[in-house]
Length: 551
Ligand code: HEM
Image (cartoon, rainbow, N blue to C red; front, side, top):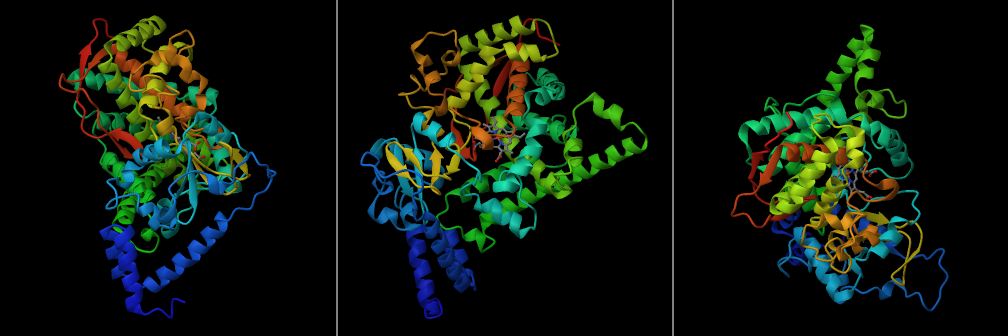
């Protein structure tokens, strides 16, 4: 079919579809390409395969009158169902939305169609759910493959650079093997507790540094230094030099570049980077490769150190002193050395910006709500007293601190939209029959600020999470699946427990030592979505030393 089309006709079609659906940049890439015949062929093959995947073969659920068919799920109809073009029509220049505004677009669709919405996103339809009960059904469904949706940019990167995929991208048996060997080293509570002293040394240095300046100039950036150092301690048992400024690698810029290009690529209607070195792809590749090389370098140097200790007969003594994630990975026969590098890359990619954002937003919330900050300070004083060292028992008793973290994550849900699942069995959701292989997005981003589930959603009310509270706002506790910042189930966040400890320790050390204040003119904290929700501008924070600081 393609061979019969004249070159000009193909070009004209590209121009037409591009004008309708694509950005100028992709149009240019397509037109500059000498190999567009290959592109068109590949697109056609992929669309056919995707269309087959999307054909609905119902499996287990019997036909009954009270279960409505998949085709009845509300959502945009007509031209909005044309593959690729349909989703492109939802964005600029046809509307005011850019791909980054997807959460707002989805909230509008919810207001128009209800708590379950079907949207054509390429060749297939994606189901978006906006009710905690539906989220619960999807999270608790049965999965064996644990397949992921829409991660085409990193997939392309790994393939082109001949790097094996890590835990974030793998699925099925391969994923399960890698996940098991990683999670037993960082997700088990007893093991994660061993990392508390390591994180604490980083937090103490951070506080000492801030005591000198009495202010933070760029909250997000400085917290990224703290979280980079903490991940350095987890992955390499080594300080990377981000707090004292001795590092020669610009982690912050590279990480932001990697997350921004990943985010931008996520909703592109046509994934042209799969065929060409587009600008987005180049930015993703360059930043990710730099981080990957850094990980490889650090792993090599740690390996040499471990071997030297072994030769000198001092390895056991060294390993007894502190937990060593890298050593336990390297000595795990289920994981190859190449896989170790990619696991570390995953932890860096998923674990630095995410935690920095939660800490940054919580500090802003506390500064804007001095009564809550005072309550938190009182709790920290009562639980820790004059103790400088954080113990497991302290962390177990800081319930107001935990409520504050949860409330901040509710107000600004940390991850773009939320978790997604590809169903492996037919499911009834909201009275509709959803066939297996359908991708379902659990829209925690919208649910967590929906006043039907969380009254007074714009306010910072940590009390809503406390068992002892009997205020009307506590009804959110009845909807636990509306607020799952770390996801749920076997594919939930691998770093959840490490992240929580990192956040708790940083906040408790800061609030133990300083009262945090925003400049008087700051009333609003603008945010932007770059894979994770992030402050959209530099935020200054003043630190007023407590009368009895813990030094
Ligand atoms: C506030 C901080 C964090 C948040 C909100 C967060 C959130 C999430 C979410 C929502 C998922 C997907 C879960 C699902 O689909 O059910 C996820 C996956 C993941 N997270 Fe986190 N995360 C955070 C910190 C971290 C840290 C510190 C690390 C590493 C040390 C990490 C490593 C990972 C990895 C490797 C995955 C992929 C797991 C898999 O696919 O099996 N995360 N995270």
